[in-house]
Image (cartoon, rainbow, N blue to C red; front, side, top):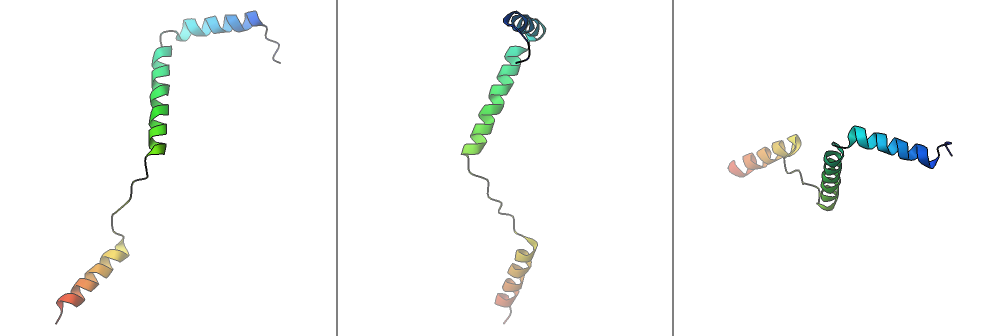
Amino acid sequence: MFGLGIWELVLILLIVLVLFGRKLPDLGEGLGRGIRNFRKSMREPDEIDVTPKEGEEKEKEKEKGKKNSP
């Protein structure tokens, strides 16, 4: 494959553990929290936007004016 034997991979793993050993729990926690939030957002329905559009506001004002006029 890449020409790496088992001992080269073990050596690389040890170097990674020495360099990032103290940060690995934090990285794992952050990754887990991110995956959990992603799954939660996929399960929840999308929020519905109920803000009226510009055209709808003008139509409602016109309808109110027609109802109020004699």
